[in-house]
Length: 179
Image 1 (cartoon, rainbow, N blue to C red):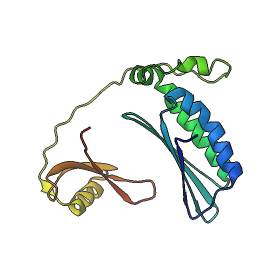
Image 2 (cartoon, rainbow, N blue to C red; image 1 turned 90 degrees about the horizontal axis):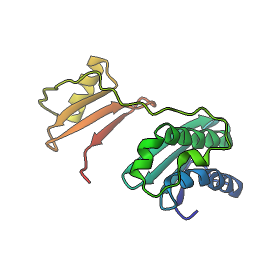
Image 3 (cartoon, one colour; image 1 turned 90 degrees about the vertical axis):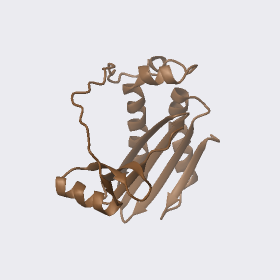
């Protein structure tokens, strides 16, 4: 598949792994369309193998990440996780991706749990007062509040940003970019 990019960190991939990944990703391409782009990032740290899959189709971005001591197992679980995300949000995705085959028809032969579409229930709205802060101040305030994320007005860029705590204990910064 020409739209699949393989990225490695601290490891090399065998052709058999690439073939298996491309074969498993055929279902993702059927669901999203052949013009979708998929990045498969494989990294190795000691005995831990991590596979991250990011699928992009227009403005839709889907991501799955799995860690295992076996690279093939991590790949299989990551692809399965990505397909579950697509199925869970099938109606919304079908509306966004015009011309894609019905997701139900692709899974007719499988006996997997069918997810019913549920409305997104917003149970709370909150206004946030923001004073200009530097990123380090925002991280400190987020940690003091005991939150996993924190929205703030960045004093350097004069934009609203979100700082968040990653699973690995490091921090991420979200910056809005209007399409």
